[in-house]
Length: 426
Ligand SMILES: [Zn+2]
Image 1 (tube, rainbow, N blue to C red):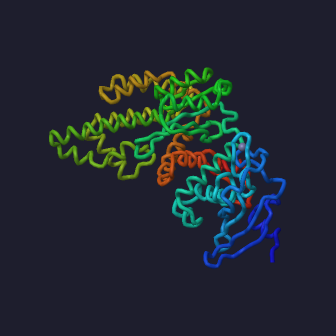
Image 2: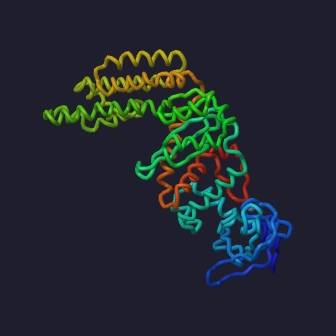
Image 3: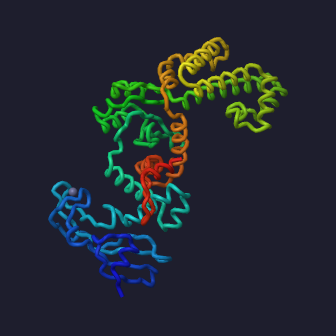
């Protein structure tokens, strides 16, 4: 007995889909539901949705994997004729239950996309009975669909530009975040002028002129492009990257002292320096009791290293202040670093002076979230690892946008406002 209305509800399709019959394939333990698009939704191009005359029967009947029915795998089966689109030529006609070119239904795609942002890689593949490679293609479709439905660059005023390494640091993505919404708005392979130019080409001249602030890591190629393309923007140096410079300088000092201690054979110093790396590089509020004692030993056995530590910490504190107070603290730090006679920090001092204007812009612009740049950076690194096994970097970029761009769809059959979708961007 066929109750089409119950089946439509169970499958989550609307009246545009006609349920013809339901079969059970005992051998495959699979339910096959024969469907067709209702007459008025037929004969539209699968890519653009334009009405178009019929072309041929395409590859005949085909299957779309739908969400499981209880413990059973389920497929929708239908003809897949082609239409003659004036723009796209012969194209498989649109169907109401699936995205163009998909082998899965919309709901199946959406559930996979939701799971990817909420659980582990292996859980997604196991639960949904799909390969990780297919997951990459699925989320690319979901994100492309969502971005086509709404202008991803709407209302951009204050942006952050950053670079993320992937494939063990051999390749890079350039990414753009919106400081006001907290979303990742764009990403592309490469880290050079040409890559960033493609973002501003997409944004267009008019909208680029509306950008009032750009934060970045002080890389030359970013500064050059921003200057040319965002005529009204102030360039700010990301506090996150500045502090990373100071941490790196401190680590250089530590390595140099360690090297010297080994060279001259100073067992006492070596014993005290051993294992102090984390104590030196971590923020003091996160130190364990043991690490605090390690730091105290550094203070007593090597004054230079301890001074380098204090220089790093004071530099970090500059970015916790705001406005004039912060600028005064920056200048005080500069005059100390200039005279400190620790080569790594004298070098850092010169670098900071070169970028003083953009650092001051950061310190005096309210509401620039350092935490956003830092958390996006950390999360994207994790996502690049999760993307191992995807077919292309387009899938990797889709994963980044899905998770950090607010494109995660609600679970099928439940509605959720985009506001709460954003709230999950923790
Ligand atoms: Zn078309």
